[in-house]
Image 1 (cartoon, helix red, strand yellow):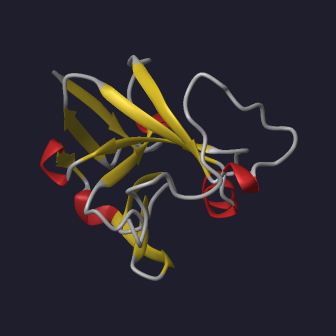
Image 2 (tube, rainbow, N blue to C red):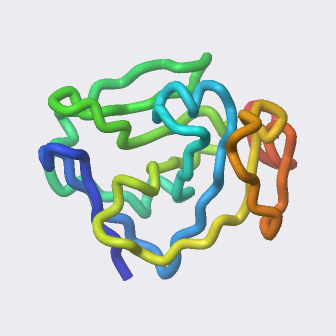
Image 3 (spheres, rainbow, N blue to C red):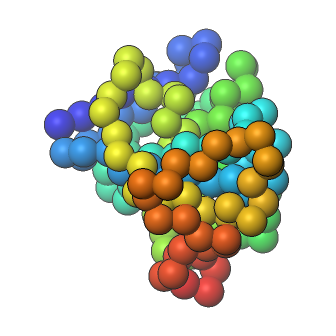
Length: 139
């Protein structure tokens, strides 16, 4: 199965090859600033599951933390990709960039110690004050 998405202006387009989408909610200050929201919802994937359909060359790369990068469309500013932060080579694509309303499963909440008080926390998935065990720079 494939899931397609892209940036606001449509210049950057990608495809994710997966049977199902798993996502993580991150409440860290960096994600709040990057997305302008109370928390980010990122689809987690391996690099071989992501294909660029158009506009890969339009992505600007910003090193938001040592070895951690966020990439965004230079035309419209849409945050399209996160990589390097987890330390395991995985990628994260903001769920809001996917076309339509694909079904996805929230697998975890992380950096809940940085959550703003007005952001509700769904208690059905495990929550971690920082990186979940096995993830992150020391994972």
